[in-house]
Every structure is written in structure tokens, then in C-alpha cells.
Length: 260
Image (cartoon, rainbow, N blue to C red):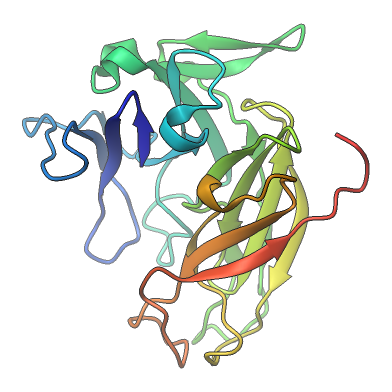
């Protein structure tokens, strides 16, 4: 979700019933603080499994830290996480797009990051020209018991937030059993992995658990940019031995290795 000029935008996604592919996505809009939402119900904005997992870049309350009058969004192809039955290729790339704040629901006004020229981002209206701001094709728990969580890919539906005091963009991703943390100096990357937290195989406990949908709300970043809160959930449907299916926060402390 994003809010700009008092208007809220929510990325909505059509998932296969088994959660192993994401064929379509759209953007809904609310001008009354979330009481009602509108979107084009006749067809999705994005389809064919291309850019169908969408995460808005969090630039602070009402986009206060945004550099221009665009709304920025990251996207995945194929699925929102590892496709457990390989119905579609597992996501290994994170993509970036932007749209004018006046026309977020107009697909024709969207532009896709298509690389760098002399360090400056290139933008294209052609979605086929998009280039990844992050590529990570690691597989974790490759040799784990096939009857449990195993062979997990690391690029998933998470969150991207601008940490203004550190002048860093933080992408938080996850696997079934790990948290993955990336940082970049610019929205278009390049992003690099700076930390991976392994929660261990199932079963988990209430005292030790990972989760999915990892994000860092800008609201909870301290003035120094080094103390913040992570939001994640453990679905009751997972064989995790525990669940955490509400607004669930834990503290994260960052210690920069050098001045940004």
C-alpha cells in the first residue's frame, strides 16, 4: 500500500488456489481513508504473470520523502514466492516501475526501469524492456527432507522502504525458513545482500519463528535510521508448529559498517 496526496493505493493480486502462481494484478484506489476502494474490474492492469506481485516503495507518510511526483513500485514475475510445485519459474529478479501520482491506475502511464546510462536510470513504457534491479538465484535448504520446506528461493513478496537518515533503500525478502535483507543507494539499485537470518527448520515456537511478507514500515524507523520494527506473519496453514497471523512486530537494529 502507498499513500500520496491523501490518496491510498493498494496493490491487489490474483493468485492460483494453490498459491503457486500469480497470473494477474491491479491497483485499487481510496480517497476516503480506506472506507471504499475502486479499480477497473473489467480487466487487470498486469497479466500473464508479468509484474504481477507489486510492492510500493515506502517513502514515508504521504510520500513525504519522495524525490519527485511519481509513485514507485517493485514487482516480481511468475509468483509471489517460490513456486513450490514449479507451476511457473521461481522469481529470481526484482523489477522497478514508476507512474505519475496523478495517473497511478492508468497502465499506459507506467514506466519500467530498463537499466542505467552513465549512472542515471533509463525508463521505458515497454514492460518487455524492464531490467532487474536485483538478481539473486540462490537456493537454500537444497538437501532438506523433500517432505518438509526445501530447495527455497530467496526473492519473494516483501517490502522496500527508504531509510532517509542512512540514505539507503532496504528490501526485505524471505523464504519459508529465512529472512533476507538487501540495501541500495538508489531505487534502481544495485541491491546487495547484507544479512540473512536462518530460523531453522520446522517446527518453530512462539519464541523462535520467522514468517512471510516481511516489511519495515517507515513509521517505525527511529530518527537515526538504525532502530526499526519488522512486520512478518506465520500462517496457520503452514506446518510450522505455531502461528502469528496478526500485526506482528519485532525490533531490528542496524549498525552501518561505514558512513553512508
